[in-house]
Image (tube, rainbow, N blue to C red; front, side, top):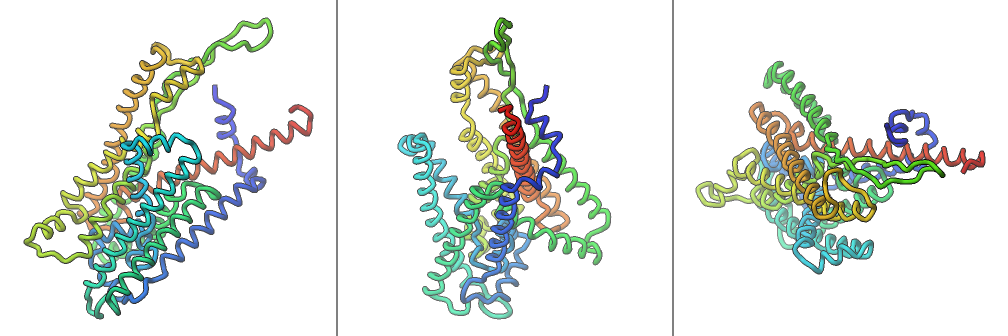
Amino acid sequence: MASPIEHLAKNFNLSSFKKAQDLKKRIWFTIFILIIYRFGTYIPLPNINPEVVAEFTRSHAGGLLGVLDLFSGGAIGRMTVFSLNIMPYISASIIVQLLTTMSPQLEALKKEGEAGRRKINQYTRYGTVALALAQGYGISVGLERIVGQAGCAVLDPGLLFRFTTMTSLTGGTLFIMWLGEQISARGLGNGSSMIIYAGIVANLPSSLFNTFAMGKQGTISVMALVGLLIMVITVISFIVFMEKANRRIPIQYPKRQTMMNMPAHQQSSHLPLKLNNAGVIPPIFASSILLLPMTVFSFGTFDPDSILGNVSRLFSHGQPLYLACFTVAVIFFAFFYTAIMFNPKDTADNLKKSGSYIPGIRPGDATAEYIDSILLKLTTIGAIYLCIICLLPELLLMKISLPFYFGGTSLLIVVNVSIDTVSQFQSHLIAQQYEGLFKKGRSRGLI
């Protein structure tokens, strides 16, 4: 039998949205923050020659810069103060979470509740500043080496330029981090994911225009465009199916007395375990962790016959070294993030304390091992699914040189964030309906 929440979710109508004032405020606040973010992606760095930067970006659009430009919402191509985007913050979060699993002090701090969480967030912010400064310095040095037909990319190179570039990029990253936190607290959806989502979606119109222009010019055949459309629809459908897939573990609750002189009855429910517990985090983490070497190789000039030259060539987008590192990183973060977010031991202890159990499984350690074994299988399938989604479309699209926007990673992020945002929208709407029911009950004296 469907639960009351499931019943409301199936039968709510959007007319109740007019009464959901809090939800409206959250939506408008999120849109307002994203507009501010998009404005920031057009504020250029000081002492930059935009023509040379645009020329350099176009010549490297199919490589590593295309990857970086995707997640920055086009800010890299314009070399703006938001060029680093939120990636240093994500990288710092990864490092802090890794240290939390290895350091007893940080692990104890994590268990202190809200105070401990604020302290860990503070460490993450310090790490964000350090990484942003390091990447900002690398970009400033790389920009000084870029020379195009219109001259040098930097109008006045030197220590002052490097200092202003580092501080501007770091300030831009910290401001984006703050915007993301505001969305998470007062808006709709996860702040970091929404920032990346907005950057990818902003490239959609230009990517579609370029794709149809290539078809009109004969660069791409009509069959290739039809195949592209079929592939995108298939990938989106597959992502939605896999993201909604879950394994339901039956849970038996202790007998409860319902009414006086009536026999007690046992209640049952289930523990849902998603096939992809990590969601869109693994590809985002993998992309952000590869950001530093990618930045060095993109702006650096190496002898093609040298070791660094060969590594730079193999590390370019679509090449074996890049694909291997990206695959390993996605698999690692799929297991790592799942282990952080879901602890089978804690779940088993909570079931034991409440008197609940899994039919056929002894409470305690046996239950934890049973949940852990199921979670291991699900995570393995989920990691393989993420690798297929992120890599296979990329390899196919590289053969016909289509815009990077249509890659598997970008589609995964867009679809996943859309699903999460719609789920939050429905949750707020259902809460509004429950609030209306409670008000009616109080007015009639039923509550």
